[in-house]
Image (cartoon, rainbow, N blue to C red):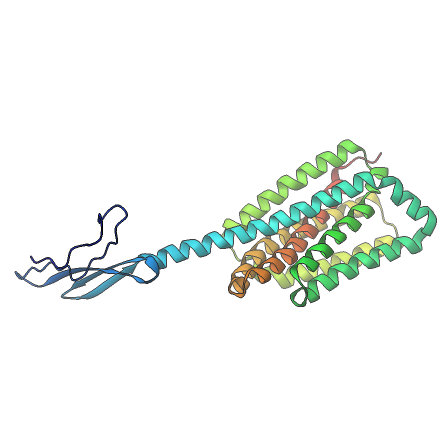
Length: 290
């Protein structure tokens, strides 16, 4: 057994510059076994074992980098859900504080004002989804929170139709339902992204059905059936968007922090819409009208 150059310039275990070069262990009975320690690039330690059958290398730096990537992805997904939560808080505050202002707005503008408000909301969502990659992340964030505030202004009308207790219980049920669906979709091996076309077709059919009911009011049972279908559909959309959020961050993570911020906003918008729609369907199914 021979030993090469020993560590220099300080304690090899505490604070010194530690290097291992040409450290060999050699056995010549039935074959040759060599063990080498080499300093890997970027501060990582590479362990190389060479035997008569060939080399086997394990790079600790690669394992460390993999852990860093996974941690960055978890942080990015958490950021998207954080943006969604802030949007929901803005919506709730505006809905609670803007009840009288919304009533005065409708009295002054009538159906024209209501339709105009809906057009503005849809326009903001479409522009944000279509042009977010061309705008600054700060501009996209402002547009998202403006959209959330307009949604809250519109949803303030639920306080005229439902008891506060029903609204609170429905909100709690929706939050619990949303959390369970998100955890399931992020941990299951089932690929919800494959169901995207089916969910989109279901969404189009649901919109058409609601437009028909708007002009031709149906029975209470018909309304409940539509709400139940909508709840199931947006439960599927929630799981789909949760997995899509993770996929989008993996796709754009190499393009820098600015792109990650943009992806966070568009993912937050998708998740926000899932939550709001589920809440409204739960409220109509289980809420008692005041």
